[in-house]
Image (cartoon, rainbow, N blue to C red; front, top):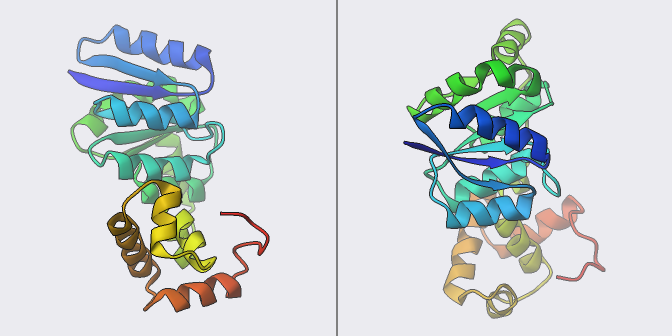
Length: 215
């Protein structure tokens, strides 16, 4: 039995997907969410094989949310469902960890095939999008070092560049100092920086944070 989570801010679409899946013996709807916060909570508390995710769900971009979900549960596969037919957006979604990408107009005809492919370990892209990319390959998406960070890592990065000590950050985030040190090491590795001072210089050079911003 393939357990599915559905995350979409429109109840009508969630209901439509649920009705499609209920007619199939190999699929089970394990939970639903209507916004990014409830999606994250659902992934944390519910075991499932695939998350069908509205890529424009409230308060996140789809790419950010895909990346965060994959960090929470590396075993869950994400099928991004979106109205955005842009090739660059599709590439960013896959780079963030999506296993499938369907545009809204192709979802009704390709949903079951996409879920079956993803459940077996494959990758699915809508036929229309695949043809579009084949005809017009997108330019490589340049990623700045800080854009490789997860939301939590970016928060720790911000706090480090603001001059907070490891213990202060741990207290603010309600985690151990060891966890914060692990985050810092991961940030340095992802951004390919030698030490904390380099992080501060990078933030200043790219004007990432307002001096008046509170942590």
